[in-house]
Length: 84
Image (tube, rainbow, N blue to C red):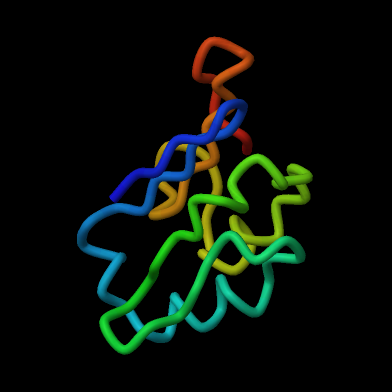
């Protein structure tokens, strides 16, 4: 699953998107409410994507950073560089 804002894209691996525990941790960690925990797992709030402050709390909640993380924050303004 991926959602693109103007400056930031958020990608959650399909295998992780249905994980309700991960969804809860992401929703709890994000200070700008990009992630929503639903009964089916992770949901993204498209209108909040560009509110991302690059705090990395979602990456910590996901338990990994970089290419191995189930959650990726993609800096569209930086040629698609990953936040790690």
